[in-house]
Amino acid sequence: MSAVEYNLLTEKPVPPQTAQAYRLSLIAYRRLPFAICDWPFAIKDLCRLARQLATLLHAGLPLVPALSALVEQLQGDPLAEIMEQVAGSVNAGSSLSAALGKHPNVFSPLFVNMVAAGETSGTLEEVLFRLAEMLAKRVHLAGKVKSAIAYPLMMTVVAAGVVVFLLSFVVPSITQIFLEMNRPLPWPTRLLISTSTFIRTYLVLILIAVCAALLAIRTGYRTKEGRLFADRSKLKLPLFGKLFLKLEIARLTRTLGVLLASGIPILRALEIAKGVVQNSFIADALDSIKHLVGRGDNIANSIKKTGLFPPIVFHIIATGQISGNLEDGLINIADMYDGEVEMTTKTLTSLLEPAILLAMGAVVGFIVLAILLPIFEINQVL
Image 1: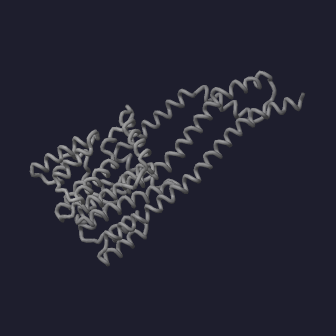
Image 2: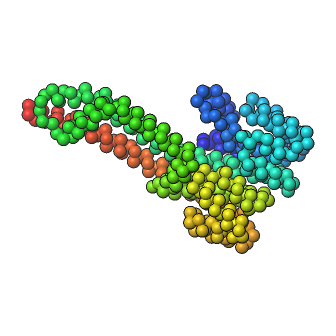
Image 3: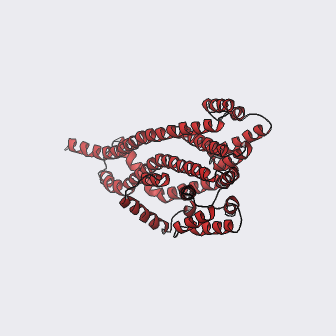
C-alpha cells in the first residue's frame, strides 16, 4: 500500500495535488478490464466508510441523517448504492447491524458483529473508530508484506525472462560461428551451447509444463487438503515462514482484542476471528482453541497447547487474564508483531534485491565468459 493510501485511510493530511492525482488514478484503475473483481468492496473502502460514519456521529448527527449524509458523500462510489439500501432499512426501523447483515458479500461478520456490539453498549461511534483503525492497520501491514514478496518475485521473473531471451535468440547466432570453425571449445562454451540448444528445442514444452504446473497448484490450492498443505508449508519457508506467522498473529490478536474491547464474548470473538485469518492451518488451530475454551480451559493454556504460537504470546495473554486486561494484552501483542513485520520486510527487501542482482550478474557474466573464451583462444593461435 502506498503512503498516500495509508494517509487517506488514517485521515492524515495529503497535499491537494497528490490527493487529486491519486483519486484520478483510482478512477482509471476501476475502469480497467483486469481490475480485481472485489475491488469495489475492498477493506480500504470499508475502512474509509467506518471512519466517515464515525466522524458524522461524533459531530452530533443522529444515525439516519448520518447515513444519508454518507450516501451523499459516496456518490459515484460502488458502495453508494449499498449504503443507500442500508439507510433505507434503518429508516424503516431496522438496526444498523441487521441492515448491514443483509449484505454479507460486502460486510464481513467482523464488521456486522462489532457494529451490533456498539449498538448494544451505546458506544457505536467509538466502535466504528476502533474498527476503522483496525482495518487501516491490517491494510497497511498486508501491503508491506506484499511489497516485500512482489518486488523480489518481479525481479526474478524479469531476470529469468532476460536469460531465456539471450539463450534462445542472441547466443545461438554467436555460437554458430564457433561451431562452423570445427575447433575444440572450452567447457563453458560447450555448456552454454548445450543449454541454448535445449531451451530452443523444448521452449514450447517448457512453457506448457510451467503453465500446467501453475494450473495444478492453483487447482490443488482450492481443495481443503491442498490449501492446508500449502498453508502449513508456507509457515516453514526459509526467510518468509516466520514473516507469515507474525503477520497472522498480528492480524488475529488485534481482531480478538478489538472484539473483546467491544464487548463480544470470547467464544463468539474466536469464531469471528477465524474468518479474518488467511492461513487455514492457523484457522484449524483456532477451532482447537475455541473447543478447549468452550470446555472451560482459559485462552492462554488453549493457545499454548496448539504448539503453534511463540511463548511470548501466551505469556502476555496469561498476564492479561490475571490482571483483567486481556484485550489490552492482545492489542500489545499485535502492535509488537506489527513492528517486527515491518522491520522484517525492510530487511528482506534490502537483502533480496542485491542477491537477485548478484545472481543475475553471475549468469550474464558466465554467458559473456563462455562467448569470449573461444575468441581469446583464436587470437592466441593467430
